[in-house]
Length: 504
Ligand SMILES: Cc1cc2nc3c(=O)[nH]c(=O)nc-3n(C[C@H](O)[C@H](O)[C@H](O)COP(=O)(O)OP(=O)(O)OC[C@H]3O[C@@H](n4cnc5c(N)ncnc54)[C@H](O)[C@@H]3O)c2cc1C
Image (cartoon, rainbow, N blue to C red; front, side):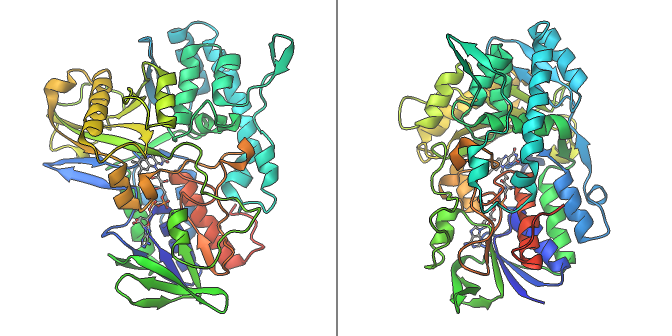
């Protein structure tokens, strides 16, 4: 039995902790804040409750696997998973609206044909077939296996089978989601549909690799899910599973250093000056902050590094809305209100220092869940957008301008919103930084192939033997399922050693 110190109680860290405890290790988690879950939090006031982090779950199989492998009670026995149907309604810049059924190819094709014109559905359906190929080619290395030592192969090879596109005298293939939109989808609204999936993870569809096609594919193939009571319930269930497996948690316990002995990680040092010795240390910490915890180099030349962000650090701006009046029948759980000017939105995201803020693409979540409202005569709504984490979030004017954009967009999804608004609470990347410890409150995207390796994350092992990276800032990147998989990979690497080749 080894002693394992885990830094942080984020979803990736807790997934690793539960698995390691089941393998017979003594696991202690040190969390700097006063609760578990990291980004997966709940805000409560006056009988209203809101998820402040992720509001939906994709790839539930990752958490199903965690619960199967760490105890007899399956995930479905500890939380109620609900399919979100329609998966989303889209309100495009030109006013076109379409509701897309959950995980139904035929349904999506028919809905797009009806809303956008004959042929649109088929083009989207054909795109999903190609996206599936990219998914099949990268699912193992980018989700289920530790980062390949020869990761350059993943970085160099574009797995998305783009359709040859004749332009002037040249034949070209789409290398970005924006090019897939222009050359393969050939409809501004279909292009916006694809781009909103990519942007939703904080990636710029003009520069991300075409392999980002796996992001809409994941949702399409495995569905969009909600956890009754809010996604925070998933964090609670994982935390409770950890407790049942005798993982020990210390809250208000910031790790300020990683102990090293004989060239190995040997424990952690806490802000109160105390020390906890351990045989392995697992860190759910932003890369720059992790580097500050040890003098030992964690990467060498030729390793994937996470210090070169692909956008000026994407974050989230979220408005929690308490509304009087019940949810109307037929209200949709998720509405995506597309930006009136997508190009300007992306320009602003890429260089936030420039002009005045512009209206972003906004996601409106209206879960039909009695646990989130005081009674049937009220409704709680969460409105969010991807924003640059580095904009001036300390400045009230910036926050006000963006809040107005969010409310304006939300009005297109929730009838009579302004008259119904009792109060609202705005959360910026400053809150994310407080809750996750990530610099600037940035939110990591899932790892992607191609793109010269800029969309890969550092390996779960480090150059300091005994120190492992887990969570959204390490392989295979951010998001609930990916962070959960990083937990499985770290547990596998500790239990089976460096020869561990995958979790399935
Ligand atoms: C507003 C928001 C919206 C999001 N929306 C989505 C979404 O729609 N879909 C999706 O899949 N993902 C979404 N995400 C991302 C997703 O929540 C995360 O990728 C996922 O929860 C990853 O968790 P993690 O393991 O990286 O831990 P994190 O959530 O990053 O938590 C890290 C934990 O470690 C602790 N910690 C850090 N440093 C120390 C230290 N030195 N000592 C002790 N403790 C420390 C922190 O306090 C924190 O509790 C969103 C995130 C945010 C913030």
